[in-house]
Image (cartoon, rainbow, N blue to C red):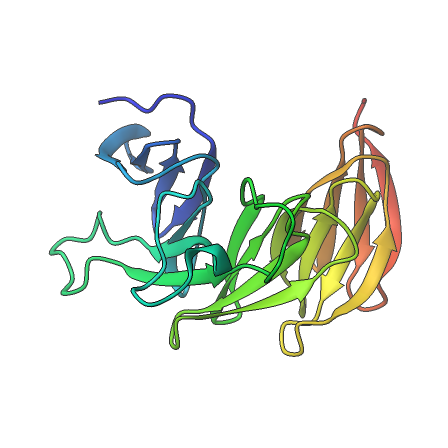
Length: 231
């Protein structure tokens, strides 16, 4: 079975994992072919996926899941799950789940998760325009802690001593301290800040409207270069 409308992907070991609205697939790196696909009947709109030392994780924001028995559904968003569908042999526990609580008395519901990254012994998930937060999910304790952001988040990356979140509407990237979970810097970048990655001792941000890429020095939080990529 093929994968229709692939939405997100993650690299784990030598394979690439692709998620759609209702399925997860594994692409074999050596053969560059779809090796396996698993239907996800409970997956709803806007799933995101990420991988790291803490495993392969998927966060689903479609309202298909319910909180643990005895909890109020209105106080929870959805769930992040450690995927083990491709393990051979299968582990004793099919998947680890972490419920993500919502803010009490919130006027609007989260519609989707913007992004997910795995690092610093945790899973980091960004919200949307209604839930302007980044969550730190702890696999060992299966708990979720939220950090309020100054605006709507988009993508998240981990590295160089920080958690880096692009602002959907504010043309900047926020730096979150991985220990205190506080926003410690708001760095102006180009117009339409979107993707973010950490590599080569720098933080890189794509600016969709400007058609540029911003290079940030994580030691000083200063912009080192703005690169025109022909936009």
